[in-house]
Every structure is written in structure tokens, then in C-alpha cells.
Length: 65
Image (tube, rainbow, N blue to C red; front, side):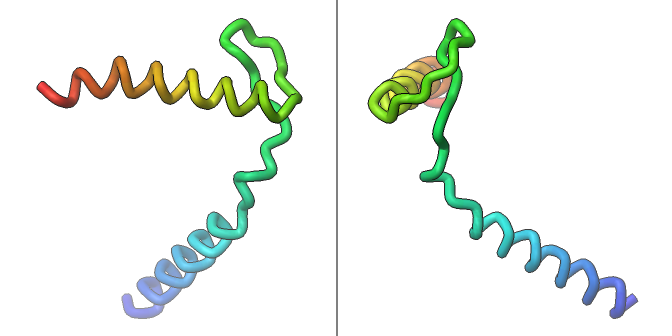
């Protein structure tokens, strides 16, 4: 039982370390609403802003009330 717990804990620590190692600032392209690939940094930034604005506008209103 303790050995299984130790293995599980070790796996969780390894997974957490791997997630931290991912550099999310290195995203070089995303798709816009029409499915077109955006590669320019300014367009990617604008897309993320629009995405989160829409997400918070729609989902945020649901969670407030």
C-alpha cells in the first residue's frame, strides 16, 4: 500500500515538473475564428484578447448570478 502511494506521489511530482517546464510563451501560431492560421505575433495577441473577452463576457455573466 505504501509503495503504491509512493509511486503515485512520484508520478504526480514528475507530471507537475513536466507541466512547469512547458514554455507557453513559445506559441508560434493559432487559428482564428474562421480556422485560418495566424503566425504574426500581433495577430496572435489580438486573437487571444478577443477570445478571452468573449469567454469572460459570456461565461462570466452566467457565474455571477
